[in-house]
Image 1 (cartoon, each protein chain N blue to C red):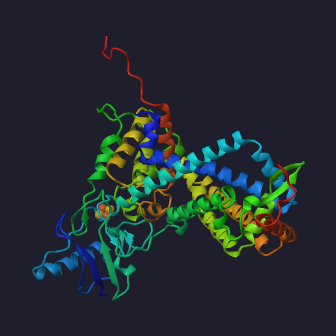
Image 2: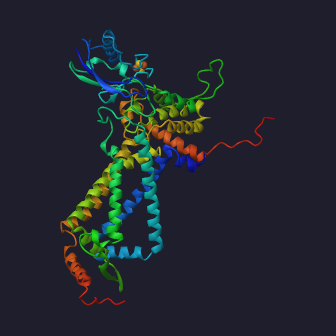
Length: 258
Length: 258
Ligand code: FES
């Protein structure tokens, strides 16, 4: 099969970009979308032109590196899969496929289809961790976790941080991502000590990065390759409200040991 | 971070303001509807009710100022959030066809602004009684007698007001937009406060649809039945005559003495 690609080409962050059209060479319909881009790139490179830059790493749907808005939908036509798990058999011979980068002020374009997602890293650094002593691995069952909470926490932990939620949201809101991270840790006993500090810090960083806010349209949930639910945004909203009500932890007078 | 600055300066906090003021406005919309539905009773019913409200200026002005503050906050946070949301996606996609969201959820700002314009007209129409905008005449001349006292003839005003086709149409269009606004907003309100999970979400959505449909039917019935001359037609003939009479400067003043 052959397809026509209409791809966003942009040299660097501050140069203007434009769509350019490429004809693919003959393709195997069981190629993944990224393999198709590899083949097209080989063709482009052989002509002495600059190949299309795109993000990829594991190519098995677990790392969250691949991106691309394909025909208007982040990660392509299917539900619950990433671009690397999208195959050419999902398209028809002769189709024109529009390929664009994630578009958000907080995700500036580095080149072509590659965007800078370090805003997500900074949100994680703000509070997406727990403080524990390292050392020998603790006994597996030393801290009991209820089945319901562990299931929910695992659902939230599915988030691979790809940013499709931001890309799909009409407000370029990162709330699904932040909510998944907040809920993942906030549901487990190890995450309790920093639970309220965490949600405040992560939301503050999210706002600083210039993401929009949730208007409950449900686009993020619909495109998420890990099918993270809007329920988690509600959970984050709840935790944030509780955190505001609880206020800052009191400073201890003196502040020194002994 | 104090709770006030946490609410006023964060995206989540502004969503709380949207949801909280939205909930209060929803309560007002219901109370106002119950009051207005009295137009389907005898003229004295709604006139008595209006007279009762008028006789409690402290309560009425308290409610008016309270409502103004609530609407002001609702609009303020909506504008703040929308500006930030637009800024979060400076470059739009090739294909702007949205994915996985309802159109009601995407046009909240538009429906909200039209409703705001309607409220301004509604206040000028039936509260400030500006004579130039109702297509009938000077409503302040409509008087009736209740318990031996002179009172405003609210019943007559509504009947005459809604017999004008474009007024009735405008009111019904505004109600349709309120329906659209509420069918999304009522559900989103629960989400913003974090009051949902996967069990309650479908129920909340049914509640939002049912409540917004009920409100639409209740409100739209008033202009519709009056315009179609189902309600109050005889009464209209009577008061129309009296309004013209008392409005004409050459005629002697009506029997009422002051
Ligand atoms: S490349 Fe790792 S998820 Fe697609």
